[in-house]
Amino acid sequence: MWVDQKCQNPEKVATYHQRLKDLGWFMKALKESPARMANKEDGCKRTFWEGRYKSIAVLDEEALLATCA
Image (cartoon, rainbow, N blue to C red):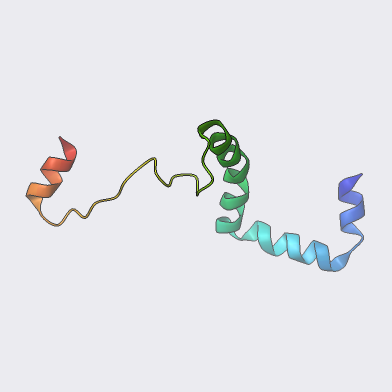
């Protein structure tokens, strides 16, 4: 079994333990597969959200209202 093979190497166990404690690494690993599938469907080669959404600076209340509208 894959787990049994990996558990015999203490360095690998320490590496996986460290990674699983890191929420950022876990989220990256979690979103990688669906991101690859979505990019394949869309014919993209960039990062997952790139080109799908745009960010703008909301500097005052008027800009906030325009953004919400």
